[in-house]
Amino acid sequence: MIITLKKNAPAAEVEKLTKSFEEKGLQVNEIKGQDFNVFGLVGDTSRLYERDILANMWVENVQRVSAPYKLANRMFHPEDTIVDVAGIKVGGHEKIVIIGGPCSVEGEDQICRIAQEVSECGADMLRGGAYKPRTSPYAFQGLGYEGILDLVKARELTGLPVVSELMSADKIDEFAEHVDLVQIGARNMQNFDLLKAVGHMNKPVLLKRGMSATIEEWIMSAEYIMANGNPNVILCERGIRTFEKYTRNTMDLAVIPIIKERTHLPIVIDPSHASGDWKLIEPLSLAAIAAGADGLIIEVHDHPSAAWSDGAQSLKPENFQTLIQKAKLVAQAIGREL
Ligand code: PEP
Ligand code: MN
Image (cartoon, rainbow, N blue to C red; front, top):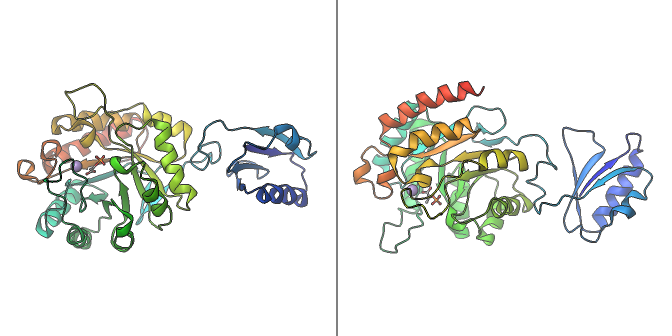
């Protein structure tokens, strides 16, 4: 619910009203970028009635927000949120960010080698999975803690902040210490205990869209993280499951303008998992930037055919470099920098 007070409402009255909402267990959020006499109520407002609130002579307008998400809602926060990942700014009118790296960390040499290559190509961050959510229990499950320490080595070498997937809350301390951007994978998008746990972390979160999640369910997952105290959420579209078989998933481009309209959060596109095919990465990346994405996360491997996971969708460094050069032109065409 959004409450607008009259311009001349005395501070004491504003405070009285704020207290009365807080006593009902609601969180009162000042709406920034507008008149300070506008605020949003977060919580269960189903038992508040517009006419009762309007009875207060200092209230000008009451607007019920029909969407179930509040903290993520652009109505509550008209300005774009800019998420700071170890000094790299994501969102708003900041530079479009490029995250590159292998699907899985395969060892210190491999991740350091690829980190150097993606860095030379102009990437802003390094990705690499150490805990892998694999469909088959017999497939490579990731190097675990050793992989996280390998990522730390690669960061020391290149200065690139590192992104890695957290699969369970018992590894939170490890990630809090070593990882710059905590990825929640598509399969865990509705693991609510995990979302609450990263809500308590002091690290930004990259929240991937579940493979069968609606946009609203996805935003509600961001809301879980935010409602638990962490406002630094970056959304990541990675394709959804449809009837189509020629691609691994179907990349939903429309989410970019929809997310921008409904929320204030940055959005990054993962064309690798969306397509499953390295040949499709470049056109999908260019389209995502043209549609307003704040960044790309792309799988890169120097020997894709020998990769321990997702080789078929991994770009060789030289193709990654060409992609970045073309992406710069598209960014320029829409008035952004990359
Ligand atoms: C990944 O990024 O390696 C990954 C497993 O992605 P997703 O959760 O989108 O499938
Ligand atoms: Mn992968």
